Image 1 (cartoon, rainbow, N blue to C red):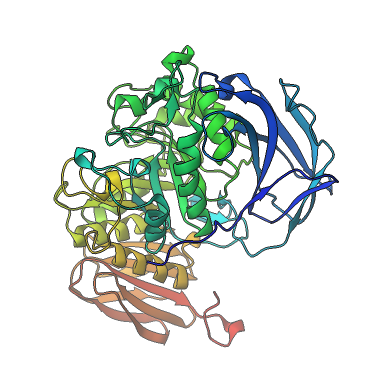
Image 2: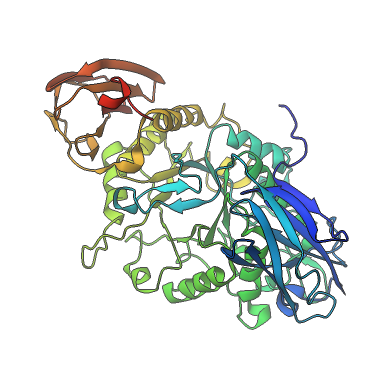
Length: 552
């Protein structure tokens, strides 16, 4: 595997004399270093040092408040006076530091009035809920583009350890790069969880000793985050892979206790402010407050989670950053959250599924509040849709079929490789597609959707189809575009096409084969579903203004 070189998009700028402090592309991350008060391993700067910068575009808008964070000596040391601010400009021009606030004189007011210069780029930017998509089910990027999301899971891979405490032998950056070849999202915990490193730990206790225990979340260890989490996030940013950061969990009490924060009087705000400061400016970062918040010790109520969500939102510089929480509730997504405000922008659900219709129906059901039936108008991700392997006894084809079903239900899915209870890539990383054999099929399916389907216009609906098997599912953009998913052989299917000429394609995600069935179909169109568990038929009306070609 070709080793990654320097991390593209993160520009380290030192303060120079004069007004300009750095140049960076739009939607890239500029890191600014400040010299502040010296902090020791026994100090708690994430709690005790207030530090933020207000950036304003030269035109007068927009304006962002970005919190800073202590980074030890700036090179991974756990003592030092280096404080950093990470900022992402959202349009070209001069961005002025109009206010530098701190409760410490070493930082307060430093370099107010200086500016950084943002230049135009081709970067896609943040992930925003597309207000114009069908039912607000889908995300778009800041540049207006859309990519379909299928994700992977590496809960504790930052520790580099597996069962028995053995090293995985795969560096964080290499593992992220491997995932980026196949997936669009990687979800992982910021802790070692069940497989901690024996020496390096994410927090420091009151005596300054490294610890895995999240009750000390108000004292993050700069070495861990500089050398591990930063590498994961920055490598993912370079490769345009979503880094979905789990802030509490998944399994061990130590990892789950960050939001309990018992050593800080039960106040998790320093932890939430810290992760917002350190990672909230990355356009590829999503935040999951807790994994299975309502399962294991400590458990959290919906009200506690909502409070943490509001605190995190308060400190995030960009409203676009996706935030949610992962439940284990049999109701999939608690209706209580519908009454707690707009701190979350998407639903996360957990339901392990093998078949197309169940995956589609479960996904589609989350879009409505079960208490009153009202639309929720948010995207949904099934983040434990299908773990391939003997752990859950999901085959390669189970995983492929389930992910096609999630798409047809109007949402996104996440996989993992699990050969036993708490065993496999889904916990410790070291991703290998030759083991997680569904990965290449899921990549192929995602690429076909991105290349051919305007999925953000589609929503679950019967469409113009007849003679269907009860297990088939469809989505529609009436009069313009339709998709139909099949999981078994069925002859003489019918599509009663609206007026116009239609391009018809068939995508077999098991065989990874694409076929054009008709270049200009009209009226009643008959076709057969093959004996495959994951086939997507795509019907797209040809544009009269594009010479009979589909417009992408």
